[in-house]
Image 1 (tube, helix red, strand yellow):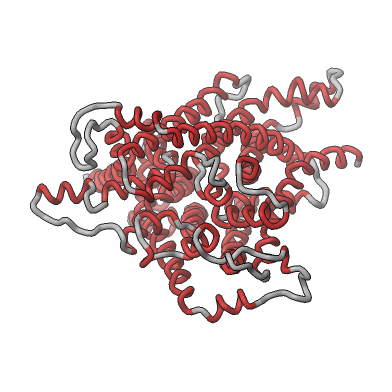
Image 2: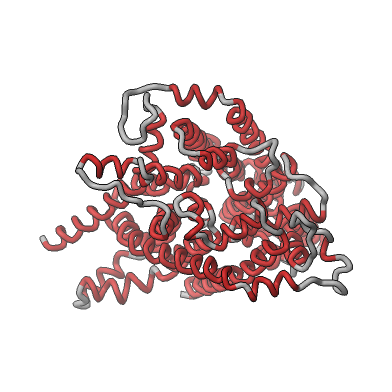
Length: 291
Length: 276
């Protein structure tokens, strides 16, 4: 019992830090979302003091009445969803090849695949601007062939491509890990039982890698949904996502409470995905433990 | 024969995807050494963009801010994260589960939410203007979980046996911790430190919301410059950021191996797999 209390003390510094600087700020976002503003769009009262009596819900009403906010939200769903599916389609064969046939090249191939992740996120997106820009590399090459110039950036497709590129390592890695864990004898057994390659893949490999696919999709969709840099640099105001609208409220000439409402709306939405994912991976871990 | 052809297709696809992933990096590094302004043709080797980068007072100041910030973040996150790892592994009381979830959440929370919520906490509750202090707090907040996850997996792998053996041989619990457990955890702790350095040094979004006009880390400064227009000097800054990060990761791979007393060179890169 005394030992328990002793080790419990170790939870305190980090636990309190996260309570104060991670959980409390979420509550503050809500507080500001029902606060009033001065002429500059900055919140006047902390937690809309007096907090409960005078909560200002008009910021929330504005968001709910406002049709223009719907488009960036839908775009976030569409772009993050499309880039997640695209990423899955690109990544699965790569992860499969490295895990099953990589042999002694496995480590090197994995490093090559992870490498882009360690290039600064901003620089990575900027590199695509260099490649796809009006006087960028691709248009230069097209020019030599007597084509173009084409406008390749500033459109939704460029944003989807940028998001796919940015989070691809997060799709390849978990899928690779789940394929690598499969006992090769299981796949052989599938073939011994006269399963075709396709049938073996569908009935053996695919179900066994479900957890990896799930992890990859969550790790692509969540950061993609909240992203604003890609749409900011490769897109433009015409294809702004919810992250761009939020960013403009705080660092542009917007209103903080309005931005707080939008941010607060994101929290439960994304929490649902996260909790669902954490629970399903915990369940999978239990099943593995039992087997 | 058909099987081989099918593998050929898979390998071709893999090669194309890896090329696609590497092209932007190659372009940035290559054109950072271009002697002309062009982003289409390579005019010859030159270091003029690096000279321009280092001659730029703002960029140099930002590089310094980024380095200081990363070092302070490493110190804070390592202390808090390591203690938390001990608590999570060894405390079996009823707050253990909630503490675990609280620790995991920041890793999966989109950065824009972390950035905005901290900005509001600092400005509305703590009355702190955005600046270096807010940056350090913000960076420690998003990176301490990574240290915890890495140290925890090593602590679990270590098991209680060694420590109990030390105590059977007459060591006090504190001596067993200091002489047996901590040295065995060192590879994981160092790995966590280096990973934290890389993450902090590379962060843009959270920094963007929490840095003032004065002290901006390098990625935030690059953003401002990109907004003004593409300049080859940005290639040089980007290549430099990449080089620093790669160096840190190479250390993260090597140092635990050198320190690895019975650690079998388990490195932080292996643990990144656990994180993901």
